[in-house]
Image (cartoon, rainbow, N blue to C red; front, side, top):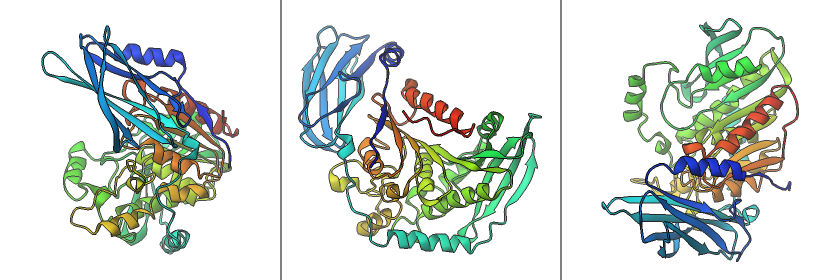
Amino acid sequence: MNSFRFRLWSAAILCLCLAHFSRGQELLVTPRNQQAVYQPKQNIQWDVQCLGATIPEANFVLKLGGLAEIAHGSIPLSDGKGQIDAALENPGWLLAEVSVKLADGKQLKALGGALVSPEKITPALPPPGDFDAFWSEQLKVLAAVPMNAQVEPATAGKPEISYFHITMDNIRDSRIRGQLARPVQGEKLPALLIVQWAGVYPLQKNWVLDRAAEGWLVLNINAHDLPIDKPESFYTQQANGPLQDYPALGNDDRETSYFLRMYLSCYRATQYLAERPDWDGHTLVVTGGSQGGLQSLLTAALHPKITAAMASVPAGCDLNGPQAKRIPGWPSWYWKTRGKDEAKVRHAAEYFDIVNFAPRIKCPILVGVGLIDTVCPPPGIFAALNLVRGPKEVVLLPLGEHGDKKGSHRSYNLRFSAWNQALVKGLPAPLK
């Protein structure tokens, strides 16, 4: 198994981030060890600071895996500063939930995260015995559906870029809808597939135009079978109507899960790029964040022509995490069981869990992991990464929440830029 290549926050980036946080009344929780990575039984320390208010103490709760409370209490604050100490005996993730109560009764809250021997974290459950057989069969079902790609020219607004709307057929009379762009000049181009984070929304034209300007043949697909450029009100109606809580739709059966069509959309989109005569036959990359990170990793696992994947805070990792006393990755099917058979939901999740796709990933991957991300928590991501067979670069974000708030994903974004610049030129992934 390849060793991990970690990229961590520099002191300069950390200081910039803290300076940004420090406006007004703020509660800061920062790891004493800048990497926030420890060995078993090693002392874990967070510095706590309350800015803009004089508070005598802070309260804290420590949660193993972000789920099981293992300690709670209060710490004194001297000049607004204090310290939390902890330790873990085994590999895992420790989440510190810290709060202070202000004089006006309001509460400030902040999180601290730490990993212990993350390279030794394992999945909560083994894969189902017929995992490969199931997906092999699904790809056969997809192959029986003609692609029927319909590519319609649209207005790019940039004379050097060709821009198109595209639809393709998918399983069960559904459609894949997206946007395609490429430079006007160039016969053979590297290809990039962009997949989307969670939610119901239109695709923005600049997402492909900007990449095409860099030299990519780029395809961006909607996660849903929806038009890509309707007014916002259309997507609001969909989100509040037929697609309300779409991750839970059909999630008690692997054959009816909403994500089955989504996963196969990624495969077909990759297939389409690989069959285009203007693909260079060398570079085929997939990228996305959160739900898009999930789709990026599964695409790298399912399609053999993917040459690199870049995934920011990927969802879908270790979906049965509570079995190991840790938060499951989004979409948290483990808990989305209302009115359904819990055992069926959790079993169906195994067929969509990135930990079970991970051993099939052989291309280089870049992955960002937020250490205070409770939506796509770090132990589940590492449970998947530890099974990846290809080279990997992991960017740890000690202050990284799920969204890129207050620049907390800056170090991942910098590495993404470096990878993007190398890959579009046909160079190897610049692993560090």
